[in-house]
Amino acid sequence: MKRAYVEIEEGQMHYRCAGAGEPIILLHMSGSSSDEFERAGDLLANKYAVYAPDLLAFGSSDKPPRVYTLKEHAETVIEFMDCLGVKAAYFVGNLVGANIAVHVAMARPERVKRMFLSSFCYSADYEEFRSYGSLPVYQPIPISEDGSHLVEMWKRTKRYQETTDVISARTLCMHLAGEWSESLHYALFSDIDLTECLREVKTPVKLIGAPAEEEKLSQVAELLPDAEYEIVNDLNPFFDRKYPERFSQMVREFFDQ
Image (cartoon, rainbow, N blue to C red):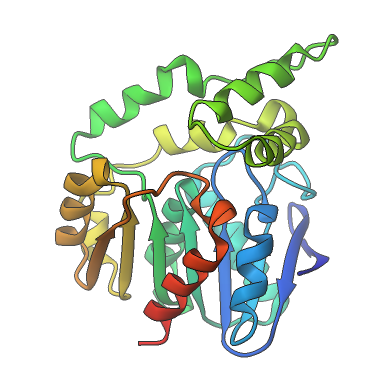
C-alpha cells in the first residue's frame, strides 16, 4: 500500500491506500494504526480502492487538540472521506475501529454502504461496560525517561499470546502514539449507550467474533435491522495482521453480495 496525507481541520491525517474501484475504508483498533491492514489492504486492492487512515493521535497522523470521543473520531473519518472525494464507502472496523464505523453510520448513513465489524465492543449492561474503563490494562501509560513504558506496552499486547512479530508491530504503534496510546479505550468506555442507537443503523452489517463473544454478537445482531454474525474460532484482536488472506476473503465475500 502507498502512503499519503490529507489535511483536515484538526491537522494532517496519514493514510495508506491501494487499488481502484469501489472504496473501502479500514479503521484500526485501539493502540494501533493503519499498518495493521498493510497486507490485507493489498489483497483487497485487486478489486477495491482501499483507504486505511491513521486515526488522529495514532500512526503518523497529527494529535488532536484533546482526547476525542468516538463520535468526534467518526467526524474526522467523514472529513477524511470529503478530502478524498469519497461520497460513500464500504467500512471495515476492528474492535474500537468497528465502533467508530457504527458512529459514522449513525451520523451519516448515506456515506456507508456496508460494514464488516470484527469484535465490535458492546455490552447490554451499560454501567458494567463503562466500568471496564477503570481496569489497569486500559489506563494511560506515562512516558518514562528510562523507556520502561515500552515494557508495559509490550505486556499489554503480549497478553493475547501472539507471535513476537505481531507484538513488536503493535508495540511500535503504541510507542508512536505515546501518551495517547490508550485514548481510544478511554473514548470507548466513555461512549454513549448504543443499545437503542443500533436499531437506527439501516446498512447491512456482518459481525465476526470469537466463541466467547457469541452472546454479545447475537444481542447486537438482534438490535441491528440488517445484520448477520459469524463465530471465528481463532479470532483475536490481531487476526487481520496474522491472517490477512483469510480476513480479506471474508470481507470480500460479504461486500460482494
